[in-house]
Length: 415
Image (cartoon, rainbow, N blue to C red):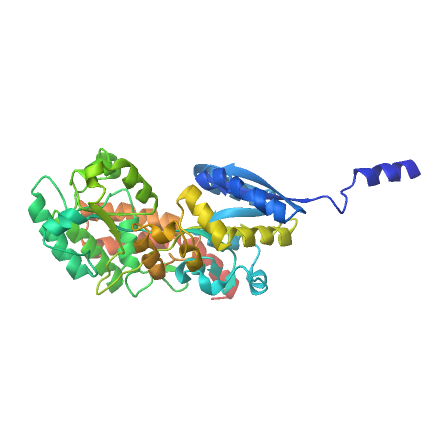
C-alpha cells in the first residue's frame, strides 16, 4: 500500500508545476497572438498558454459544442454579438470583480459603445480585445472636382455631394457603392436614429418606428436617384480597381481596407483618397460597435490566471503591437496615443468614429434578424416593397424569430 501511495503521489501535479491555460482564438488573430505570449510567460513564470486557432467559419458551432459537452477552453476570443447567446447559456464568467480590482483594465479608457457590447443585465462578461466599425472611404479628388473641399458632416450635405458627384460621373458611373449582400450600411443608418431596433426588452421588432423608416427611406433614395448601383459585391469585378478608376466615389467599409487600398490602388491614386466618419441625419453620425472580446468561461480551471492573461493583452503597448501584427484597432483610447496609429492619417477618422459607436440589440437572435434586414432591404431596392411595406415585413420576420425569446421571458418573469 505504501508503494502504491508513493506512486500515485509521484504522478500527481506538483504545486510548482505551471498552470496551462487553454486559449481559443480565431482567424488572423489566432495566428499572431502567439507572438505576444513569450513575454507574458516570461513575466508570469507559473503560467503557460496553449493557443488553439479556429477558423471563423467554424468557431461559433465549435464553441456551442464545447459548451454542451463541458469542454470549453479557459479563455476565448468571442465576437461581441455572440456574448448574449453565451450568457443565456450560463457559459461565461462575470468579470466585474476582476475589473474593480485591476490597475490595468481601466473601464473609463475604453470607448463606451464597445465596452457596452460586453454588458448584459448590468454585468460585464468580456473585455474588448479589438474593435471594428465602419465609415466612409472616399475619393477626395473627385469630391474636390464636384465642388466640395471636405467630406459630409450630415445627411443633407451628403445628399448634395452624392448628387453632384453623380452628375459629373455620368450614366455609367456612380457616387457610392452599397453592396446589396451587406446589411451593415442600412444598419448603420438605422443605428443613427433615436428609436431602438427592438422593443420591450428585445421581445418584438421595432422596424415600423419613425426612425427606422426614415433611415430606410434615405437608403433607398440613393438607389432611386441612381447614386448607387443595385449590385452585390460579387457583381463588382474588383472593389479596389473600381474605386481607383472612379466607378464610385464613396464606399462604406472597415479598418481592414486601409491596408488594402494602400497596397492595391495605383501610385497616382495614393493621394486621391481619404477616410471620414459617417454623417448623421443632422450632424456627425453613429456607426456599428463591432469586434471581439476576451471572455473567461464559467468552467475555466484557473480563472485568476486567465484574468492575468487578459490584463496583459489589455495593456496599451501590447495592444499597439497587436495592431501592428493584425491591423485590428485597439479598444482603449490610450492605445491610440503612440505610433503607428497616431501617425496614420487614414486611421484618424476611425479614432473619431469610435467615440460614436452603438451596440446592436443584445439578443441571441440578432444575427438572424440582421440577415432579414439584408433580404428585405434588397427587395425594397428592387422595388418589390415600399418603405412602409418593408418595415412591416421586417417586424413580422423579427417577431417570428423572437417568438421563443418571448416565451422564455414570459415563463421566467411571470409576464
